[in-house]
Image (tube, rainbow over all chains, first blue to last red; front, side):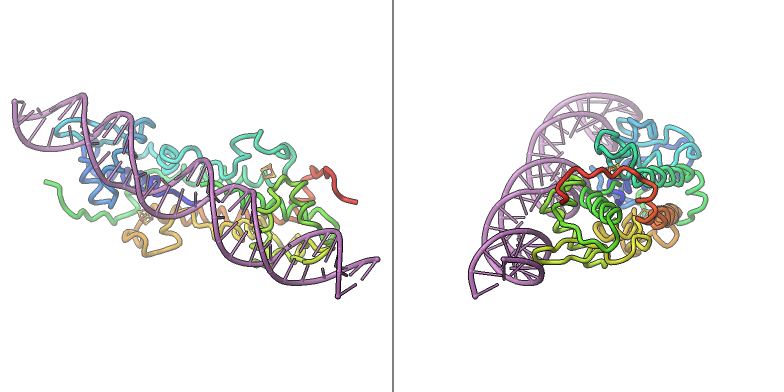
Length: 144
Length: 144
DNA sequence: GATAAATAAGATGCTTTTTGTCTTATATCC
DNA sequence: GGATATAAGACAAAAAGCATCTTATTTATC
Ligand code: SF4
Ligand code: SF4
């Protein structure tokens, strides 16, 4: 019942990108260093974020990462689910056939509700808002 | 970000007990059979529930399980956390030292809020209410 | 007290997920 | 072509999840 490291790293990555000048290409290494993400691990994560249409990856020298959409159109939910898959909380919520009691189960309904609430809360938190609210990003280094 | 099988089994166990006549001692095997829980696995789970003060385990012949408190005083949250530990959603919510950004991090605040909401929703669902609401418990067998 | 019917407790094992790293290849700028 | 990036796939250690096996203990009843 907790976010994986990969999920957290994805969030940190987008948080960093969203705090950079809009449209700027940022080196993967810079993100990794500043946000304390294992360098190569970030590659895998960035690729998932790219598949989800959240970031754009530019190859070659002068390459790096860039937000694919405006930060106000990327939510915490988008990023987390891009990495860890859709949030369901309980198996029977994703697969009706996983439990024969599902149709009449009162517990099932609680999980469904909890899921909706959680996804709504995460969905309302956009990275534009998160960056504005948090004034904590001191860079360590590395930038020209 | 999903409930473990053990957690789900714990919930099923209490659901079954709460649906039985109040104060009745129910054999572990009966619970396992009716709620499709691996028999021996239920032993481990029941022991955790006993430590948490949710069920009472009676040994010996004529032994079995019994709710330690009234079903209206046991919530879904109680049972889930008894089995899987306290819900935090993200590491930095349980351990302030796990991330140096924590004090000023806006993402952290979202996770804290989401956690409170989730725990509240699960906490409001009592097994008395769940049993009343769900009329799905057909027993398969085994009872005299 | 012996027997039968239950649970307790610890060790063990298999599988899946998580969290990475290593290596080789490819793209782009100059 | 060389320097500087990322891509992509294989690999692997560690942790978590999901049980099961075995042996011991407790209790009711005869
Ligand atoms: S018993 Fe209810 S909550 Fe549990 S898996 Fe089945 S439908 Fe879902
Ligand atoms: S960056 Fe924010 S949300 Fe992520 S671990 Fe640190 S404090 Fe928590």
